[in-house]
Length: 234
Image (cartoon, rainbow, N blue to C red; front, side):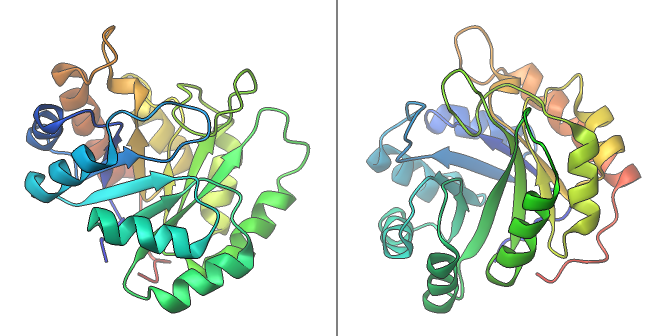
């Protein structure tokens, strides 16, 4: 299993050149969104598999699959043992996935919506899912297109901070993070790790080398300064 604490993930890799750019900038993990209900994928599964096999640093599959058997099939096909689940997967499916893929790193998304009436349902999600996952990722919702993740939108970091303090598993902060705001976000939320997708892209929607490098540098400094990981069970 991969170690989450103190890590930086860059998601939305388009090809091997971009993967190498991100690797050289010092990122810990590469994220590959696949089988998405809203956003278009950045590359085909076969091309993603090739990049994953060649890049030499851990990769994470990001998907909305709702069936544990389909998640396992995807991981086996991609030859990647790390999965980030963004869909509304049933607790029974999470349990089955943990039982049948004990070596799989499972990261489960928690979506912090702008219209959230109470934090209690999100705490309930964390409490129920924690026995079956290795980490959580807090992300944003786009009400215009229904996307959860890769929205470029931040959310209420005070809510994220409370969820980080509540969780017994490491929590990754995502949602609209950029080189300019990631240090502030980490100082406020104190997550175990951070993730960005659109926040380090240029106008051509590809990763910008300077933005990626600055994001990793700012995130690394802030994580070292503001984050402790005494609760991790990984």
